[in-house]
Length: 434
Ligand SMILES: Cc1cc2nc3c(=O)[nH]c(=O)nc-3n(C[C@H](O)[C@H](O)[C@H](O)COP(=O)(O)OP(=O)(O)OC[C@H]3O[C@@H](n4cnc5c(N)ncnc54)[C@H](O)[C@@H]3O)c2cc1C
Image (cartoon, rainbow, N blue to C red):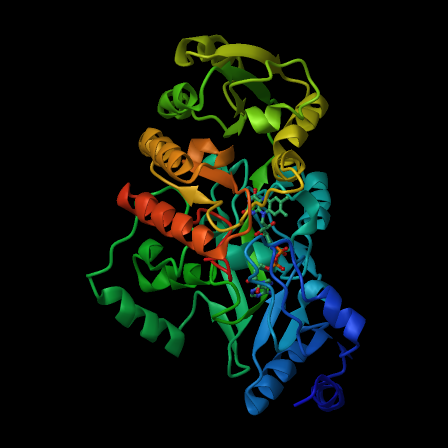
C-alpha cells in the first residue's frame, strides 16, 4: 500500500493526527543514530484507545509498527518502515509517596521539574538530559550517571501497562498468557548471562526469579513486546548535600584499577573521560591522561576525608555547591558532542561498539582488548562513560568508511567483551546497530 492509502484508511479509524506528508516522514526517518529509514506514515496517538486502534489496523494490513519517544536513542531502534507512533501526547503524571505513575510520552525534563517540587527524583538519568521520554527509557532500559547507586530503568520499574500486538491491554505484574510463555523460556536452564551491573542486550530473562517480576522483561525490549502506555516508577528523595571530586590519572589503566575500591565507599556516581574529552573541558585541568568524576550524596564529611586514601590519582577539584556541580557534570554529559568535535573531516566514527559493559574488576582486560584492536587496525579511540558500572562508551575513529573493516572490528570486539564476561550493550540497547 502507498503511504497515502495507509494514511487515508488509518485516519478514518483513529481520531488522532495521522501524517503521510513526505517532510514529516523525513523528520521521522532519523533519530540520534546514523541510520535512515523513511516510514509510511507517522501517527500521534493521544491516549491508549488511539494506540489500540492503530495496532489493530496495522495487524489487519500486516504493517510493522514502531513506537517512538524523544528519538534520542543511539542505535536506530525508534526507526521503522511502517507506522511510527509518536507517543509524546500521552503525558499524564500522578505522584505517589515513593513512586510516580506516568504515561509513556512524558519527557524526563517535565517529570524532573514536577518531582523536584516534591523533593524527589527518578534514579535513571541519561546524559541527553530532559529530551528522552519514559517510554523510550524503559524501551532501552536506560541508565546514566547515577545508575551506579540508583540502578537502570529495570531496577526502578514497579508496574507497566502496554498494548500488545493483538491490540490487547496488558498490565504487569498480572496474570496473562504472555507470562506463561516467558515462564516456559525461563525454566530452560541452559541460558548463560553475563554478571554485570547493567545490561540492555536482548531480553533480560536473567533478572526474573519468579512470575511476579516477569514485567521486567519489558525494560530493554525496544518496542518489540508491545507499546508501553504507562508505568509506575520508583522515586527517591533528593539528596541534601552532594560532594563531587575530580581526580586526575596519567593513564586509563591506572584509573580503572582504583575503581573497585572507590565503589566500596558507596558513591552515587563514578564516571571517566579520556584526554580527547578533557581537551574541551573549560576548567583548569591537565590536558592529558584522564579524569574520574566521583560523586557522593551521603556521608559527605567522612567521604571528603577518605577519598585521598582510596585513590592513587591526584584530586584536582572538590566541589559541594549544587549549582557548580551541575555545571561540572555538563562537561561529562557533553562527552558525545565533544567526541564528534574531535574527529576530522576525513575520519569516521562508527556507532557499533560504543556501549560495552564488563564486571568492574575486569576493566583492565577491556582496556587490553581495546589496545590490541587499536594496534591491529591502526585506530584512535575515544573513551568515556560509566566506569563505576564497568560500562564504557568507546568510540573508535577510522580513517575511512569501510563497512567490512567495521564489521571485522565489531566482531572481534564483541567476541572479546563476551569472552571477558561482559555484555555488548550496557544501556543503549541493540537496535539496528547490534
Ligand atoms: C547525547 C546523548 C547522550 C545519551 N546518554 C545516555 C545515557 O547516559 N544513558 C542511556 O541509557 N542512554 C543515553 N542516551 C541514549 C538515549 O537518550 C536513551 O536511550 C533514551 O532512553 C531514549 O529515550 P527516547 O524517548 O528518546 O526513546 P526513542 O529513541 O524514541 O526510542 C528508544 C526505544 O524505545 C522504544 N520506545 C519508545 N517509546 C516506547 C513506548 N511507549 N513503548 C514501547 N517502546 C517504546 C522505541 O521503539 C525504541 O526502541 C544518550 C543519547 C544521546 C543522544
